[in-house]
Image (tube, rainbow, N blue to C red; front, side, top):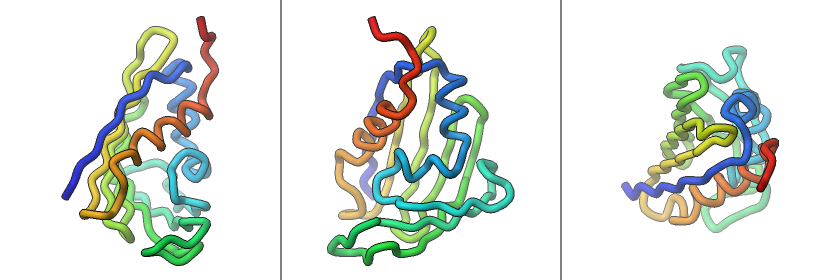
Length: 138
């Protein structure tokens, strides 16, 4: 399966980025193709299963608002989130690293051929970048 990766410096401290990511209802704000989420009672914890809706408009391979499942595989607070979207069989791993008052985010996505575009991780990180900017730009 193809694996694509991207890296982005976020202009926000690690604590702010983690607070945003740890809230399951923020996933549709930054993850392309997800229009809604219903997390289970565990929230962001290994083994948690979230119902997801998406994409919000039809594509060649998906109906609008098609239901699916997100399985949280691993969580290392303030460092790493790994999950799988079971419908498209997409595996994702987001790693965070503090850089002073900023945070480096690295996203790897693995999906079957034609499952995602090469630009998918960069698009997700761009959306995350746009949402978590609390740092001061110089």
